[in-house]
Image 1 (tube, one colour):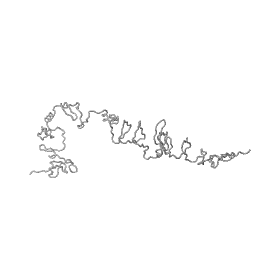
Image 2: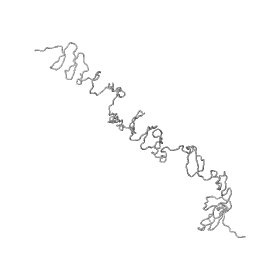
Image 3: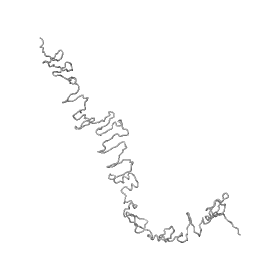
Image 4: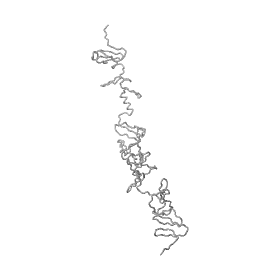
Length: 383
Protein backbone atom coordinates (compact mmCIF):
# COMPACT_ATOMS: atom_id res chain seq x y z
CA UNK A 1 0.00 0.00 0.00
CA UNK A 2 1.44 3.39 -0.92
CA UNK A 3 2.37 5.80 1.84
CA UNK A 4 -0.25 8.46 2.68
CA UNK A 5 0.57 11.94 4.05
CA UNK A 6 -2.37 13.55 5.83
CA UNK A 7 -2.49 17.26 6.77
CA UNK A 8 -4.09 18.74 9.89
CA UNK A 9 -7.89 19.02 9.51
CA UNK A 10 -11.17 19.75 11.31
CA UNK A 11 -14.21 17.61 10.46
CA UNK A 12 -16.70 18.99 13.01
CA UNK A 13 -17.19 21.99 15.24
CA UNK A 14 -16.69 25.64 14.33
CA UNK A 15 -15.67 27.14 11.03
CA UNK A 16 -12.62 29.36 10.68
CA UNK A 17 -8.85 29.17 11.01
CA UNK A 18 -7.08 27.12 13.69
CA UNK A 19 -5.86 29.02 16.73
CA UNK A 20 -2.20 28.28 15.80
CA UNK A 21 -0.04 26.58 13.14
CA UNK A 22 3.66 25.81 12.89
CA UNK A 23 5.61 27.70 10.24
CA UNK A 24 4.71 26.32 6.73
CA UNK A 25 2.09 24.01 8.28
CA UNK A 26 -1.17 23.33 6.40
CA UNK A 27 -4.65 22.83 7.90
CA UNK A 28 -8.05 22.32 6.23
CA UNK A 29 -11.39 23.16 7.89
CA UNK A 30 -14.12 20.95 6.41
CA UNK A 31 -16.82 23.05 8.06
CA UNK A 32 -16.24 26.07 5.85
CA UNK A 33 -14.12 24.31 3.17
CA UNK A 34 -11.03 26.48 3.57
CA UNK A 35 -7.29 25.61 3.44
CA UNK A 36 -5.05 27.58 5.84
CA UNK A 37 -1.24 28.10 5.76
CA UNK A 38 1.07 29.08 8.63
CA UNK A 39 3.11 32.08 7.43
CA UNK A 40 6.33 33.31 9.01
CA UNK A 41 7.75 32.35 12.38
CA UNK A 42 7.26 33.81 15.84
CA UNK A 43 8.35 31.92 18.96
CA UNK A 44 8.06 28.53 17.29
CA UNK A 45 4.62 29.20 15.77
CA UNK A 46 3.56 30.79 12.51
CA UNK A 47 3.44 34.55 12.72
CA UNK A 48 0.10 34.62 10.86
CA UNK A 49 -2.41 32.15 9.42
CA UNK A 50 -3.64 32.74 5.86
CA UNK A 51 -6.64 31.27 3.99
CA UNK A 52 -5.05 30.13 0.75
CA UNK A 53 -7.57 27.81 -0.95
CA UNK A 54 -10.94 26.13 -0.77
CA UNK A 55 -14.43 27.03 -1.96
CA UNK A 56 -15.21 28.55 1.45
CA UNK A 57 -12.88 31.47 0.81
CA UNK A 58 -12.26 31.55 -2.92
CA UNK A 59 -14.50 31.56 -5.99
CA UNK A 60 -15.18 28.28 -7.68
CA UNK A 61 -14.76 28.47 -11.45
CA UNK A 62 -17.67 26.18 -12.30
CA UNK A 63 -20.03 25.66 -9.37
CA UNK A 64 -22.73 28.04 -8.10
CA UNK A 65 -21.65 30.17 -5.13
CA UNK A 66 -23.03 33.05 -3.07
CA UNK A 67 -20.52 35.87 -2.66
CA UNK A 68 -21.07 38.45 0.10
CA UNK A 69 -19.30 41.69 0.95
CA UNK A 70 -18.05 44.47 -1.29
CA UNK A 71 -15.77 43.37 -4.17
CA UNK A 72 -13.62 45.90 -5.98
CA UNK A 73 -12.36 45.17 -9.51
CA UNK A 74 -9.52 47.41 -10.67
CA UNK A 75 -9.71 46.21 -14.29
CA UNK A 76 -12.45 45.45 -16.82
CA UNK A 77 -14.83 42.56 -16.13
CA UNK A 78 -16.20 40.29 -18.88
CA UNK A 79 -19.42 38.32 -18.21
CA UNK A 80 -20.07 35.47 -20.64
CA UNK A 81 -22.99 33.66 -19.03
CA UNK A 82 -26.58 33.95 -20.25
CA UNK A 83 -30.02 33.41 -18.83
CA UNK A 84 -32.60 35.26 -16.81
CA UNK A 85 -30.57 35.07 -13.58
CA UNK A 86 -27.11 35.68 -15.04
CA UNK A 87 -25.05 38.82 -14.62
CA UNK A 88 -25.12 39.35 -18.38
CA UNK A 89 -27.68 41.92 -19.55
CA UNK A 90 -30.88 40.38 -20.91
CA UNK A 91 -34.03 41.81 -22.44
CA UNK A 92 -36.49 42.26 -19.58
CA UNK A 93 -40.27 42.32 -19.72
CA UNK A 94 -42.08 45.64 -19.15
CA UNK A 95 -43.51 44.36 -15.84
CA UNK A 96 -40.18 43.11 -14.50
CA UNK A 97 -38.97 45.37 -11.64
CA UNK A 98 -35.91 43.29 -10.72
CA UNK A 99 -32.42 44.73 -10.26
CA UNK A 100 -30.82 42.50 -12.93
CA UNK A 101 -28.73 44.02 -15.69
CA UNK A 102 -30.53 44.91 -18.90
CA UNK A 103 -29.26 44.98 -22.46
CA UNK A 104 -28.78 48.23 -24.28
CA UNK A 105 -31.52 47.15 -26.66
CA UNK A 106 -33.98 46.96 -23.79
CA UNK A 107 -32.90 50.35 -22.39
CA UNK A 108 -33.30 51.98 -25.81
CA UNK A 109 -36.75 50.48 -26.25
CA UNK A 110 -37.90 51.92 -22.91
CA UNK A 111 -36.48 55.39 -23.64
CA UNK A 112 -38.04 55.31 -27.10
CA UNK A 113 -41.46 54.64 -25.58
CA UNK A 114 -41.10 57.76 -23.40
CA UNK A 115 -40.24 60.04 -26.30
CA UNK A 116 -37.07 58.50 -27.65
CA UNK A 117 -34.28 60.12 -29.51
CA UNK A 118 -32.23 63.06 -28.38
CA UNK A 119 -33.83 65.33 -25.73
CA UNK A 120 -33.66 68.85 -27.17
CA UNK A 121 -36.69 70.88 -25.94
CA UNK A 122 -39.81 70.77 -23.79
CA UNK A 123 -42.96 72.82 -23.32
CA UNK A 124 -44.86 73.18 -20.01
CA UNK A 125 -48.40 74.31 -19.29
CA UNK A 126 -50.32 74.43 -16.06
CA UNK A 127 -52.13 76.60 -13.59
CA UNK A 128 -53.09 76.46 -9.94
CA UNK A 129 -53.02 72.65 -9.73
CA UNK A 130 -49.54 71.89 -11.05
CA UNK A 131 -47.47 71.47 -14.21
CA UNK A 132 -48.36 69.51 -17.33
CA UNK A 133 -45.64 68.47 -19.81
CA UNK A 134 -46.77 68.71 -23.44
CA UNK A 135 -44.99 68.90 -26.78
CA UNK A 136 -41.38 68.25 -27.58
CA UNK A 137 -38.58 66.78 -25.41
CA UNK A 138 -36.50 68.77 -22.90
CA UNK A 139 -33.79 71.28 -23.83
CA UNK A 140 -30.63 71.97 -21.92
CA UNK A 141 -31.60 75.62 -21.38
CA UNK A 142 -34.66 77.83 -21.47
CA UNK A 143 -37.42 79.24 -19.25
CA UNK A 144 -40.37 77.46 -17.65
CA UNK A 145 -43.46 79.71 -17.54
CA UNK A 146 -46.69 78.87 -15.71
CA UNK A 147 -50.02 79.88 -17.25
CA UNK A 148 -51.44 80.59 -13.78
CA UNK A 149 -50.67 80.77 -10.08
CA UNK A 150 -49.58 77.59 -8.34
CA UNK A 151 -51.74 77.17 -5.22
CA UNK A 152 -50.24 76.58 -1.77
CA UNK A 153 -51.99 73.19 -1.59
CA UNK A 154 -50.01 72.11 -4.65
CA UNK A 155 -46.62 73.27 -3.39
CA UNK A 156 -46.84 76.84 -4.66
CA UNK A 157 -47.19 80.23 -2.94
CA UNK A 158 -50.52 81.33 -4.37
CA UNK A 159 -49.03 84.68 -5.45
CA UNK A 160 -47.58 85.92 -8.72
CA UNK A 161 -45.11 88.48 -7.37
CA UNK A 162 -43.73 90.09 -4.20
CA UNK A 163 -44.95 93.48 -3.01
CA UNK A 164 -42.57 96.40 -2.90
CA UNK A 165 -39.79 95.80 -0.37
CA UNK A 166 -40.77 92.18 0.44
CA UNK A 167 -37.89 90.62 -1.50
CA UNK A 168 -35.47 93.05 0.16
CA UNK A 169 -36.82 92.20 3.62
CA UNK A 170 -36.61 88.44 2.97
CA UNK A 171 -33.00 88.85 1.89
CA UNK A 172 -32.11 91.16 4.80
CA UNK A 173 -34.77 90.99 7.53
CA UNK A 174 -33.96 94.26 9.31
CA UNK A 175 -36.36 96.66 11.05
CA UNK A 176 -35.77 99.29 8.39
CA UNK A 177 -36.55 96.83 5.59
CA UNK A 178 -39.66 95.63 7.45
CA UNK A 179 -40.94 99.20 7.76
CA UNK A 180 -40.31 99.73 4.05
CA UNK A 181 -42.15 96.49 3.20
CA UNK A 182 -45.29 97.34 5.20
CA UNK A 183 -47.93 99.07 3.08
CA UNK A 184 -50.51 99.84 5.80
CA UNK A 185 -48.33 101.61 8.36
CA UNK A 186 -50.48 104.78 8.04
CA UNK A 187 -53.05 103.26 10.38
CA UNK A 188 -55.47 101.48 8.04
CA UNK A 189 -54.27 98.00 8.96
CA UNK A 190 -52.96 95.96 11.89
CA UNK A 191 -49.33 95.29 12.76
CA UNK A 192 -49.41 92.56 15.44
CA UNK A 193 -46.34 91.85 17.55
CA UNK A 194 -45.65 88.90 19.82
CA UNK A 195 -46.46 88.94 23.52
CA UNK A 196 -44.31 91.42 25.50
CA UNK A 197 -42.07 92.61 22.64
CA UNK A 198 -39.02 94.75 23.42
CA UNK A 199 -39.03 97.93 21.34
CA UNK A 200 -36.12 100.37 21.26
CA UNK A 201 -35.51 103.69 19.61
CA UNK A 202 -38.19 106.16 18.53
CA UNK A 203 -41.62 104.71 17.75
CA UNK A 204 -43.95 106.82 15.62
CA UNK A 205 -47.61 106.01 15.08
CA UNK A 206 -50.77 107.72 13.85
CA UNK A 207 -54.19 107.15 15.46
CA UNK A 208 -52.82 104.46 17.76
CA UNK A 209 -55.40 102.45 19.74
CA UNK A 210 -54.31 100.10 22.53
CA UNK A 211 -56.76 97.39 23.58
CA UNK A 212 -54.86 96.53 26.78
CA UNK A 213 -53.02 98.29 29.60
CA UNK A 214 -50.18 100.75 28.91
CA UNK A 215 -47.26 100.90 31.34
CA UNK A 216 -44.54 103.56 30.91
CA UNK A 217 -41.41 103.05 33.02
CA UNK A 218 -39.58 106.24 32.15
CA UNK A 219 -38.59 109.41 33.97
CA UNK A 220 -40.40 111.86 31.66
CA UNK A 221 -43.64 111.41 29.69
CA UNK A 222 -44.37 114.11 27.11
CA UNK A 223 -47.82 114.37 25.49
CA UNK A 224 -48.02 116.85 22.60
CA UNK A 225 -51.81 116.87 22.34
CA UNK A 226 -54.26 119.75 22.20
CA UNK A 227 -56.95 117.73 24.00
CA UNK A 228 -56.47 114.93 26.55
CA UNK A 229 -59.58 112.95 27.56
CA UNK A 230 -59.55 110.49 30.48
CA UNK A 231 -62.54 108.25 31.26
CA UNK A 232 -61.37 107.56 34.81
CA UNK A 233 -63.05 109.94 37.28
CA UNK A 234 -60.10 109.81 39.69
CA UNK A 235 -56.70 111.03 38.52
CA UNK A 236 -53.95 109.76 40.86
CA UNK A 237 -50.64 111.59 41.34
CA UNK A 238 -47.59 110.43 43.26
CA UNK A 239 -48.63 106.76 43.10
CA UNK A 240 -45.34 105.33 44.36
CA UNK A 241 -44.64 102.17 46.34
CA UNK A 242 -44.52 103.97 49.74
CA UNK A 243 -46.28 107.37 49.52
CA UNK A 244 -45.62 109.99 52.26
CA UNK A 245 -46.61 113.63 52.83
CA UNK A 246 -42.97 114.64 52.46
CA UNK A 247 -42.83 112.85 49.13
CA UNK A 248 -46.06 114.58 48.06
CA UNK A 249 -44.67 118.04 48.90
CA UNK A 250 -44.89 120.29 45.83
CA UNK A 251 -47.08 117.82 43.93
CA UNK A 252 -50.04 119.11 41.97
CA UNK A 253 -50.80 120.85 38.72
CA UNK A 254 -48.78 123.49 36.88
CA UNK A 255 -50.27 125.54 34.05
CA UNK A 256 -47.66 127.28 31.93
CA UNK A 257 -48.21 130.97 31.24
CA UNK A 258 -46.14 134.14 31.45
CA UNK A 259 -45.62 132.84 34.96
CA UNK A 260 -46.49 129.36 36.19
CA UNK A 261 -50.02 128.97 37.54
CA UNK A 262 -49.79 126.31 40.21
CA UNK A 263 -52.07 124.34 42.51
CA UNK A 264 -49.80 122.34 44.77
CA UNK A 265 -49.71 120.45 48.04
CA UNK A 266 -47.36 122.13 50.56
CA UNK A 267 -46.31 119.80 53.36
CA UNK A 268 -45.06 122.61 55.62
CA UNK A 269 -48.56 124.18 55.82
CA UNK A 270 -50.37 120.85 55.39
CA UNK A 271 -52.58 122.45 52.75
CA UNK A 272 -53.30 122.80 49.07
CA UNK A 273 -51.86 126.10 47.88
CA UNK A 274 -52.81 128.12 44.80
CA UNK A 275 -50.57 130.69 43.23
CA UNK A 276 -53.60 132.48 41.75
CA UNK A 277 -57.00 133.87 42.77
CA UNK A 278 -59.97 131.53 43.09
CA UNK A 279 -63.00 133.14 41.45
CA UNK A 280 -66.34 131.53 42.36
CA UNK A 281 -69.39 132.46 40.28
CA UNK A 282 -72.13 134.36 42.10
CA UNK A 283 -74.43 131.35 42.36
CA UNK A 284 -71.80 129.31 44.21
CA UNK A 285 -70.40 129.55 47.74
CA UNK A 286 -67.57 128.36 49.94
CA UNK A 287 -68.44 125.48 52.22
CA UNK A 288 -66.72 123.68 55.09
CA UNK A 289 -67.94 120.18 55.93
CA UNK A 290 -71.06 120.80 53.86
CA UNK A 291 -71.93 124.09 55.63
CA UNK A 292 -71.89 127.42 53.80
CA UNK A 293 -69.35 129.83 55.25
CA UNK A 294 -69.25 132.52 52.58
CA UNK A 295 -71.16 133.45 49.45
CA UNK A 296 -70.94 136.48 47.22
CA UNK A 297 -73.08 138.53 49.68
CA UNK A 298 -73.51 136.55 52.91
CA UNK A 299 -71.34 135.33 55.72
CA UNK A 300 -72.49 131.87 56.71
CA UNK A 301 -74.76 131.54 59.77
CA UNK A 302 -72.36 129.06 61.23
CA UNK A 303 -69.60 131.66 61.46
CA UNK A 304 -70.06 132.79 65.11
CA UNK A 305 -66.54 133.92 65.93
CA UNK A 306 -64.26 136.30 64.10
CA UNK A 307 -61.12 138.34 64.41
CA UNK A 308 -62.41 141.27 62.33
CA UNK A 309 -60.70 144.59 63.08
CA UNK A 310 -62.95 146.71 60.88
CA UNK A 311 -66.24 146.44 59.02
CA UNK A 312 -68.21 148.54 56.68
CA UNK A 313 -71.60 150.03 57.31
CA UNK A 314 -73.95 147.76 59.23
CA UNK A 315 -77.38 148.72 57.95
CA UNK A 316 -79.51 146.24 59.87
CA UNK A 317 -79.15 143.60 62.54
CA UNK A 318 -79.37 142.89 66.25
CA UNK A 319 -76.40 143.27 68.58
CA UNK A 320 -76.06 140.18 70.75
CA UNK A 321 -72.47 140.68 71.77
CA UNK A 322 -70.84 142.03 74.95
CA UNK A 323 -71.27 145.67 76.17
CA UNK A 324 -69.47 148.18 73.98
CA UNK A 325 -67.24 150.42 76.03
CA UNK A 326 -67.16 154.18 75.65
CA UNK A 327 -63.68 153.89 74.19
CA UNK A 328 -65.15 151.76 71.40
CA UNK A 329 -68.08 154.08 70.68
CA UNK A 330 -70.53 152.48 73.11
CA UNK A 331 -72.07 153.46 76.48
CA UNK A 332 -70.72 150.71 78.63
CA UNK A 333 -74.28 150.15 79.89
CA UNK A 334 -76.51 147.14 79.55
CA UNK A 335 -79.79 148.89 80.57
CA UNK A 336 -81.42 152.32 81.26
CA UNK A 337 -84.71 153.07 83.15
CA UNK A 338 -87.37 155.30 81.73
CA UNK A 339 -86.75 158.96 82.50
CA UNK A 340 -82.98 158.65 82.69
CA UNK A 341 -80.34 160.57 80.86
CA UNK A 342 -76.78 159.54 80.13
CA UNK A 343 -74.27 161.74 81.90
CA UNK A 344 -70.50 161.53 82.23
CA UNK A 345 -69.82 162.76 85.75
CA UNK A 346 -66.56 160.75 85.56
CA UNK A 347 -64.29 160.87 82.55
CA UNK A 348 -64.97 158.09 79.99
CA UNK A 349 -67.81 156.65 82.04
CA UNK A 350 -71.51 157.03 81.29
CA UNK A 351 -74.15 156.63 83.97
CA UNK A 352 -77.92 156.52 83.64
CA UNK A 353 -79.15 159.50 85.70
CA UNK A 354 -82.71 158.60 86.72
CA UNK A 355 -85.22 161.44 87.24
CA UNK A 356 -87.07 159.45 89.89
CA UNK A 357 -90.57 159.90 88.43
CA UNK A 358 -92.05 161.68 91.54
CA UNK A 359 -91.77 165.40 90.66
CA UNK A 360 -90.76 167.58 87.78
CA UNK A 361 -87.08 168.34 87.75
CA UNK A 362 -84.47 170.23 85.86
CA UNK A 363 -80.97 169.23 84.91
CA UNK A 364 -78.40 171.30 86.79
CA UNK A 365 -74.80 171.67 85.78
CA UNK A 366 -72.49 172.54 88.68
CA UNK A 367 -69.36 174.16 87.38
CA UNK A 368 -67.39 173.75 90.55
CA UNK A 369 -67.65 169.95 90.38
CA UNK A 370 -68.07 169.69 86.61
CA UNK A 371 -71.08 167.40 87.09
CA UNK A 372 -74.72 167.17 86.04
CA UNK A 373 -77.62 166.36 88.36
CA UNK A 374 -81.44 166.61 88.69
CA UNK A 375 -82.91 169.49 90.73
CA UNK A 376 -86.41 170.87 91.47
CA UNK A 377 -85.11 174.24 92.73
CA UNK A 378 -83.76 177.16 90.76
CA UNK A 379 -81.62 179.54 92.84
CA UNK A 380 -81.03 182.99 91.39
CA UNK A 381 -78.00 183.52 93.58
CA UNK A 382 -76.94 186.68 95.47
CA UNK A 383 -75.70 190.18 94.55
